[in-house]
Length: 417
Image (cartoon, rainbow, N blue to C red):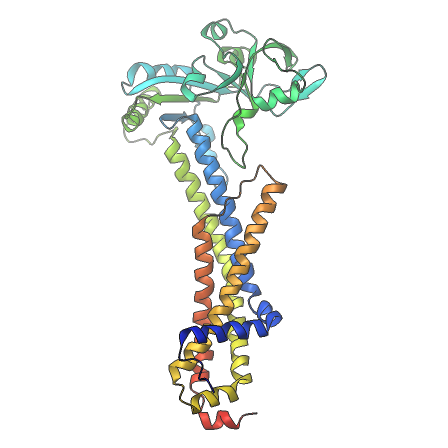
């Protein structure tokens, strides 16, 4: 009789054979591990895909830009602090002061959110109600890098004369003019008022859930918005720092705005400054909290799976008591028995981890097919972590059954039937 268990490869082979001999029982045993690994990897793939889109999104606006607004900006969890709504909005004059007084600044643009205007755009009976309507300064396209597919952007003359001209995003153009190749020059109705389309933006990269708000953009001159909707006063000031001087520009912008808003040295800022790096940091902070919640939830499935593995291994020890007695009688040591049962437990949970990974890959692909706007990119670290945790569960929860098997008395084990 060949003595198994002394050669690691044979011990591993025995573990595979035992799992294969009880396929359905093994599957039910590791079901909790499969669900736990599946959950973690799917959520990690969605968050990773979203992060890649967010990075592309903020880089598209410019990595050297500083965004100033009277309310907190960037992604955040929970409701906004109500005290922020008592803050005085920024103005175009604040932007001019930054341009004149901050030496590290290359250029300054500003935009106003026309949230009090009717944003419905109509053309030949077709309407578009999802437009992101903004009044912008003439240099907005240069500061925030707005590429045009056709036509031109708003000019200084358009702004000074408060002309009724409009630049629309690619989504707006495709919705209003599905069969028209040249959109520039068309007359549309915005809130019942006639505007001339002078330009169409190109498709932008990145964004939340694969959607970039610039593709739904509707730009009109800053002064036109102030004329049509004087109560729309939520102004954002976008500053482009000189190359290599972003940090210096941040400090200078803060100083200028504090002076503009009459803040004393011991008073906190009543405005928010944000950059591309800070925006990504805020997003990472939120996803980290989401990740912790998901890990906590999936840990329940992993714990249940681990308990199931320990239970089935204890049953296996009972079923194979006679076999253990024979092995001990012909010279197997305690560590050989422990190794055999630990290998079996780790093999069982490893297969559970592999199955969880394969299902996660399938679910991620289904998500991409059904919801193309929802990114899902499986990170390598999530796959490796899922497999490592699966094996670790087998190791931890297999110790007790393995030690119980190793402590069996060979005489008593041989008598067991």
